[in-house]
Amino acid sequence: MKNSSNRFRGKNNKEYKKHSDFDYYSKNTNRSEKNDRFSNNYAKNKKVDNLKKNDENNTFSSLKRRNTRLKSNTEFPNKNSDIHHEFTKKRNFDDWIWGKHSVYETLSSDRAINRIWCTSEIFSSDKFYILLKDLKSKGVLIEEVSWNRLSQLTYGASHQGVALQLACSKTISLEKLIDFSKQKCTNPIILALDGITDPHNVGAIIRSAEAFDCKGVIIPQRRSAGLTGTVAKVAAGALEHLNVSRVVNLNRALEELKKNGFLVVGLSGDGQISISNFQEKAPLVIVVGSEDKGISLLTQKKCDFILSISLKGKTSSLNASVAAAISLFHLTGK
Image 1 (cartoon, rainbow, N blue to C red):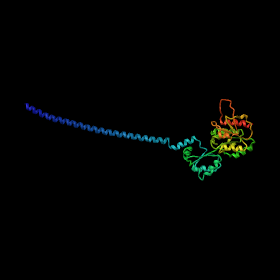
Image 2: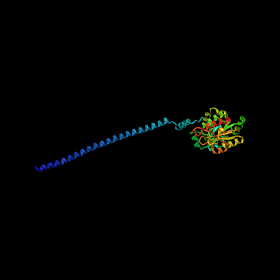
Image 3: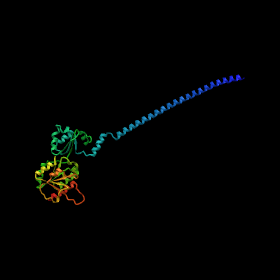
Image 4: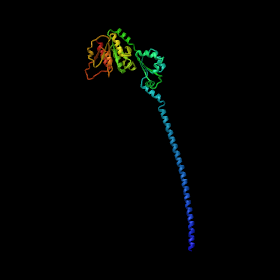
């Protein structure tokens, strides 16, 4: 019985072990199959999720690019043209002309010109050289600038290397101004402006000069505002009834006036003679300087008299146009 039980127990142990091993392996096999199926399903699901995310990202990025492109197209259809249009609206170009053919026809005509900008190639060309030299001798300000500078001035317009600004009134030569002033009056008065660059001041001086029967105004070629639209507007029509001469060099012009019998009188706060005490009645040239710098030292040396306007208040100086009007009021009444 013992042996049989041992055999039975051993056999059963072997079979049990065999069956238990089989069950273990079968369980592990089933579990591995389940794990494989789960991992495969997870990988497939993850792959699908990744594809969906990629599709969503691609769709979002394409939509973003499309919206950016549409936004840029709607807001800025043509960036350069919009910028040029915006700046040309801010700056008045009604009296500007640019381009080789347009400028050449204007220079060949009898139109009044205030200022010319050109490149060195245009200035030295056979087509423009003689015309530009002649205009420069008549007082027209001509500046040789680079191509980039001219593009900045015209805000990217097709200037072809040359541009000009028209003047609102024609100017006459200094010789004609002297002859005209002496024919109209025995003791004429002429105003000379030294370094007044504000067009509002120039316009106001021209208005006062015409109102007090001044015979003319002299404007230097450089360091002075030209006869622009602003000057004509502030002058309120006086520019049509007053002769203006634009000279290349103001000091040489003063010397020429002195040779023709004119006394040169400068206005300055440091003048030793009060304008109310000045008694000279000869033909006069009144030199008015800018508010901040006054009359230049070289011009002061050309003056026969330096006059001052007596001020009684705490204000130490006057506006250039106001000083010119006060001086004309005192000197024309003598």
